[in-house]
Figure 1 (cartoon, rainbow, N blue to C red):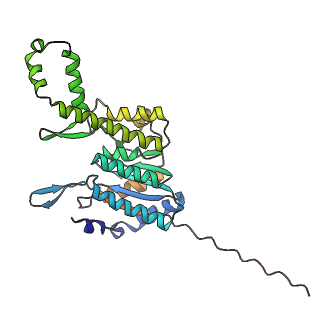
Figure 2 (tube, rainbow, N blue to C red):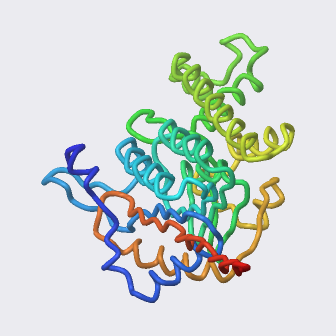
Figure 3 (cartoon, helix red, strand yellow):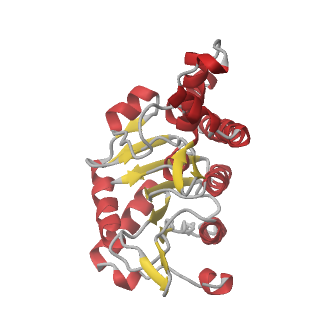
Length: 301
């Protein structure tokens, strides 16, 4: 899809039930918060005879969010509170950070709602929030960066951990003392790739730390949080639910009423047939203050 065509995609509210639209607008009005949902459809879409694409965080979607945020702030510049509804498998690391940083700069207070899953880059988006709200099935995941290596995706930290493990076991041995299987494996390790992996891990930690600090987390807590999310022994898809997120150091709160409405929105939008995220937004409608007419003073004769 061309850039201009992509930018013309607007939210299609006529596809949503009228009562859901009213509920979402009511929350925006009562909370005095802009609502932005970022929902990845479940199914991959064939975009050409040889290509199948599914929604992921990428640069083109960053432009759509930029347009929506600027529009909301133009219509109501006093509203600097955001309800961000996230449902995504993740995507590009650097783009995820740029989106998160942009939202953090534009809003004074961000509440991230996770009805189901905010994975990988979606978790990085949540690091830009002051507080997190989880649905009953909601989870975030580690944000250990993934890199293409020998025709497959691997965790940068897993690669680095494997190399460090070999160094720890055989670092003081001469090559002839190292068992043949291990020697053969170590010969296949590319030092340039290893260096790139370490640089990517560091970049991810810097991104997360910056966002958490700007979201009100103390320095040491921010460092601890991002280390646990990045240098993890678990797989990239490991689900971190509300209780574990709280133990890691995230500020986790509850809002059952709003979450119920947001979950309904995500359930509907995740069934859309699109290779891109569905983005809906609701801007608070603030009633204009009416000037009270002063009674005419009695003129004394």
